[in-house]
Image (spheres, rainbow, N blue to C red):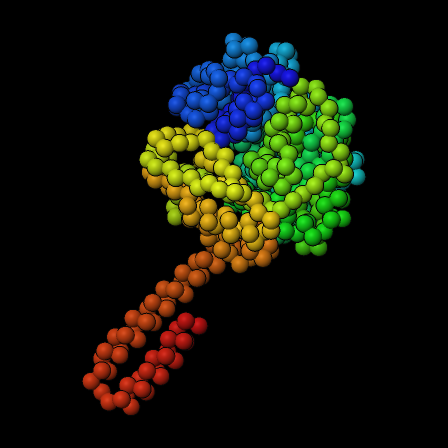
Amino acid sequence: MFGKVLVANRGEIAVRVIRALREMGIASVAVYSDVDRAALHVRMADEAVAIGPAPSSESYLRGDKILDAARATGAEAIHPGYGFLSENAEFAAACEAAGLVFIGPPAKAIQAMGLKTEARRMAIAAGVPVVPGAEDPVDSLAEARRIARQIGYPVILKAAAGGGGKGMRRVFSETELEAALRDATSEAERSFKSGAVYLEKLIEKPRHVEIQILGDQFGHMIHLGERECSLQRRHQKVMEECPSPLVSGRPEMRRAMGEAAVRAAQSAGYWNAGTVEFLVDANHRFYFLEMNTRLQVEHPVTELVTGLDLVHWQLRIAAGQPLTIQQHETAWRGWAIECRICAEDPDNQFLPSPGTIRQLDRPSGPGIRIDSGVYAGWTVPLDYDPLLAKIIVWAETRDQAIARMRRVLSEYFVQGIKTNISFLREILEDEFFQQGDLHTGLIEEFFVRRKQGSARTDLAAVAALVSGIHRRRLSAHGEVAKQGASAWLQDGRSRLLR
């Protein structure tokens, strides 16, 4: 096992990895930018090295500075967390060239799965179902039109070199295709330095279900079941749960998805932890979406349900140890839900809300886990992702887990900055969420329903005000007149609300 590991990340994931290192008796090295000098992950690490100014392009994305820090501190391996350099094949290869172990998959697997069209081809070769569409990036409007006519509208354009909703456009008719192709190509070029886009059939209102896989360097790989990640805003996940409300009652579906995920990962020569993501249509057919060649933000829900520590296993596998768990030994118990607490203002289009946390109250108790990278007195910078913490709860059933999460969110208190806690509480109370009737557009529909509800509330208030005014005006009249007026007002109020 390693004696010292550098964590090439920040925030709650850096804290999560440092805690795992401490539990395994491994010394930790943190890296930090100028604005993170007093960050929690810096405070917790055994050593810390400054790597540059606040912009990530000058600090956390500078692989050369991170490698220099590893050499200077005598670290033997680098854990990339998620984001930043975690899916950068060049950085993984540079670690190997420098004699350092990259705690993740081999560079060639990252590269293969990072190119979406290449990943599609590998999935097809492995017998994994994919959404009908192009096998290569489209090179012209004429080709895009040909493919779209072949598979039928609606279709979706996607960036070949990256995800996260960048370079993605939905197209419902041929008249929209030219502008959508131009916009998707331009956004893909800005986001990934590659304007290549490919085209697929659009699955409307899909569920987003992912499978956690774990494999060693000797060819042994298992899956750890599914996570439901359908609750998304602007293609970014908001809340996740394990198991999926759809898959949990369908053991054959779980087995089929798990086996498909393993085949897809093995086709790339993969090892360590990773996630294969699928779209599921209304008929419960699943299709390969992409593979994330790293630890996921939502990995704690899998840990709570399976009882396995994924970061511990990442370290063991990277150190060359075999995976000792067999597929038939994997079990799922209870239900876990994760909410992402972010420094953002839900009432102002979820814009980031940087500032100083003046007070932070965090609940505790059985079945509660909080992965956090902040503390009272910490100033949240504007330079990075607004994720502050993740609240994860476990209970025997989904209803109990929802109830526990509602209670925890009511007790989690942050003063000094805006957060999305109130928004998360509203989602938990939504009837479609509570029924498990989920899809990737549910939050957009939720906002429409909330707006309509607000409009009805406003109309009710207006009707009540008008009714009160008329009652006062009629107070001098006789009882019969008042009764007639009351009936007229009640009828008018009902018509107004309808």
